[in-house]
Length: 284
Ligand SMILES: Cc1cc2nc3c(=O)[nH]c(=O)nc-3n(C[C@H](O)[C@H](O)[C@H](O)COP(=O)(O)O)c2cc1C
Image (cartoon, rainbow, N blue to C red):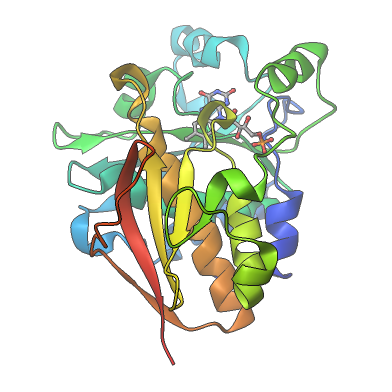
């Protein structure tokens, strides 16, 4: 994926937009998005453990009149005329894989000035699944509106204030040195500090920020975990970790820091309820 400016700038610019102009995407922008979806390599560090993912641009005119009322996304999204909808085959790391790829699309949309908003809970799943013709072997974990946004309404501001959308946990709650109760400082992180900062700024469902990273004490190995949640909420952290891995990976590439992703649980004894996901390993 090619971006017009540093990925760190785009990550800092991105914020959820729930209020749109009501106008469909301009023809050239629309074509640009379609091309982006068609040319996407659809790969992620989870590819080896995930089935195929696919993404389509779906627009309100494609909905029957009676369906249009149901797009409403529970009144949270206003004026959106276009959506990126994705499906992924059921597999071990399906949501993680989907999270990574969808976030690359969201960052590319941010780069060209469009608004987006991850919708993992509040959207009409059966309607959008039907629109993308999802098979019984696929899931549709999330969608995003995509388009020109306008000033936030009072309702949108209230949602943001409810989930404290502008705030993120401090470093000592997210990043650890060797073991879970030893915070990793900016100095400890060295050239990796900006990569971790980009993880910290990532969006997450209800802004819960369920990602935790433990750095190996001696090597540049970063182990990614999610915090265990109750079962009703458990489908979101896998998407969130996919997004976090995306931010880390794209930022490493931007700074020319070489590494590979491996799935080898280091078996670190964790006091917190952590689920191991993936590790980034520096390559000389
Ligand atoms: C996986 C995922 C699912 C989300 N689902 C919803 C949703 O259903 N409805 C909604 O209004 N926002 C949803 N959000 C947006 C988050 O609330 C938002 O990212 C978070 O509050 C941080 O705000 P920011 O995106 O402006 O940085 C979701 C975000 C993620 C990453």
